[in-house]
Amino acid sequence: MSSRRRFLSYCLAAPALTWGCRSQGSGPAPSVTPEPAPTPAPTPVKSLLVLGGTRFLGPAIVDEALAAGLEVTLFNRGKSDPDAYPELEKLVGNRDPELDEGLRALEGRTWDAVIDTSGYFPRMVRASAELLAPNVGQYIFISSISAYAAHDHPGDDETATLAKLEDPTVETMGEAFQNYGGLKVLCEQAAEAAMPGRVANVRPGYIVGPRDPTDRFTYWPWRVSQGGTVLAPGAPKDSVQIIDVRDLGRWLVHLATSRTMGVFNAVGPKSPTTMGEILEASKKASGSDARFVWAPLDFLEAHGGEANPLPIPIWAPSTGETAGFHHYRNDRAVKAGLTFRSVEQTTADTLEWFRSQPEERRATLRAGLPSEQEQALLAELAAVDARRSARVRPDTRPHGGIRHAQLTLHGLG
Image 1: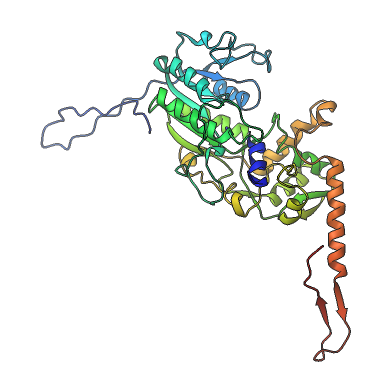
Image 2: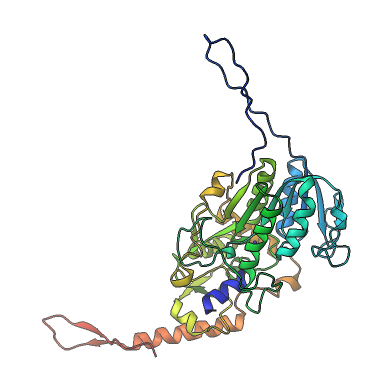
């Protein structure tokens, strides 16, 4: 596995059903043009089961579902945040039917829809989907764009080739999370096999925003808020696709209430933002004096390596095997109602949330370059620039009446 693909593996380790039919009828007298009978409205969605629901995406779904007037039930191990949503029904169990109480709490229960935020292994997704199939109208599974076999082609849509595991029975992500995408594919297929025509498989990229436990996006507004010289990866124009967790949560509830099925790339904004725009939004939100020094790809690769890639979150090289990673098409999701708030709002809200966290939480970022490593890289970049400048020697000898600079064509050393 190459260093770029290894990096992405670490960073990302997420046919319509007709609910009514048109009545034909006999129609009025032949002299009058018959009017088609109205399509019966589908039964309103009133209840929602969330598998997970207390960490990051789960609360965004729950908040939107409650705002929409749905009756929400949570199913999880009761360990991540057992005090969250005390007003809701909470069922305790395990996604693995062979561990603890397994899925027994779900037996014989009925919900209009289920959103699965915590499915990672097909055996477990199959177990929950098959158990719920007789009594649930729709299964919404949160997959990932890691489900695609390659990320080297800009503009791919949901029909792109999917990842495939050599051993489909594996139940480990692998040392470099190399199994993550293939496992998500098998989870999608397990859900669809259990509930054919009643599944929405949703493939997000980077989910960001307040409450993000990974700090992958949070690193940037927080680091920029500290001011000083900031090491920025690649080039300002490098594309980035992110989706605010609140936008995703709202849309997932919309998929349930509108009974929308299919496969969707849940990536945003509507058009990719750029690394430069994210950093500038971070600077604006914090009012800091940050200055950005852009490290080119060859420098980053030379100072990382396949065994230990630099921990630079969100960004991916815009060439080679990651050329399409931040360029997936989202037309299908947008047509199905997915909307996006601005990058500026997401950035500002994320920074405000992180500033509200306890000091010990803010002191230990879970992603991004450690300060010492960033400063060492910045010093090396400065040295590279100094060597480059030293190789530009003004030639004072006359040359056609014009003095010119002579640039050596040697490497940077």
